[in-house]
Picture 1 (tube, helix red, strand yellow):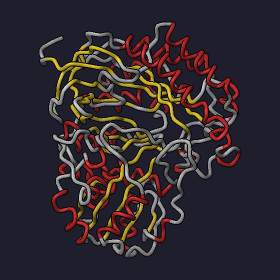
Picture 2 (cartoon, helix red, strand yellow; picture 1 turned 180 degrees about the vertical axis):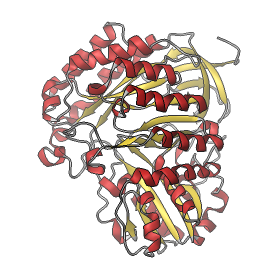
Picture 3 (cartoon, one colour; picture 1 turned 45 degrees about the vertical axis):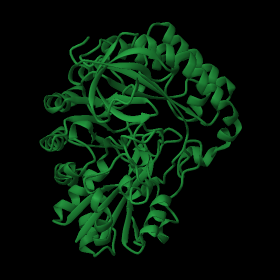
Picture 4 (cartoon, one colour; picture 1 turned 90 degrees about the vertical axis):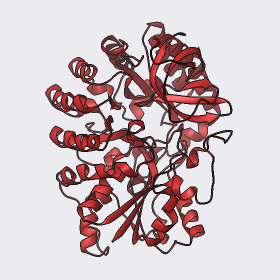
Length: 514
């Protein structure tokens, strides 16, 4: 039996799979197919688009990111799809954003492309976040549910990677349940590393997302979050299983890892559990970063462990969402502004020393959500007051991620308020966002990377006119705009010569400079 995987890319609160980040879904599904001794081709949505949309990567005035990520299978994409017995579509954005060199696909787009290709009658399975809780391409809207997609997809299967063997046994007539999924993952995750030769780029340009746990350690979920819907109970992978998966990926050339598929890395276990995981990972990694951190669970000893074993440029993305006590209470965030400030100070104290790539070892990031229940003009005043205090006290934030909430069915936000506050306050959002970008982000960036700072090992990714944009491989890397078209997919060093609100202006320097 022949399978094809079409990766439309995924972005969740706990997990990123938008190029150049390689998410868990395609790897796990590839491993499950390999276990069943079936043939499998991996394709990106870019591969499918490229049949109808041509691009000259070096000569287009602006890089067309919708067809930037073409796999080695691209020349045969039409033939691969026509010969496939089963086409698996991975899709779903729960925390949508803007992406430097990729444009995620949607089920609506897949439907149109398949109709144009004349393969709409192929057996198709939808999986990924879209199959679990729907998807939202843009913030500030109600999520698009998977309901109604069954007129196009033959099956809509959450967590397909754990069910594939059972589906094959029933000839796709019965979707089995899932028990002890991490026991199943122990076998298929290392097998999934064999997908690497079919990825778009040299392995050194990719970073693989590693999963440590599912579910959320908070007893009552945040009002907007889908993690409790996806996984009602907390389950943790054993360190040895994660290390075995990373080792398999490293044998195929992937040595950049983001331990990001969890709601909070500090909730993974004890400090000894963290050491048991990160010490061996550090020995096989070039880049080793984390993502999510709930301020409620941050401790000094665990922060020291992350600083010791992870590589520089690391970011602990804190799920703050709001500094407004009213919003915090009504949305079950459980944090308090003073406590959040203390966590930011702690991470700065332990992690702000710069490493070999020109970036601090570990800095906090802050997520801010617009559209939560109880939001008012005072919410922005509270946010600005605390962000100003953080800046004026000499602390650093690597990033402030501001987005409008996506409202998913089944969340308490959808039941209690829906889009009430989005509709009420949207007229203020540009001003609020601009206030933070101008008065906090840019001066913070100037403090973090003063003129003359040298950033090491940036990959040149896209052109915009006569400017090349580059960034390091890692969690939330700073984007550097470099004058001139200096060639894409190069690894360069760059000196900071100016600052924008969220990026730096830089010039290429010889690798020995600095």
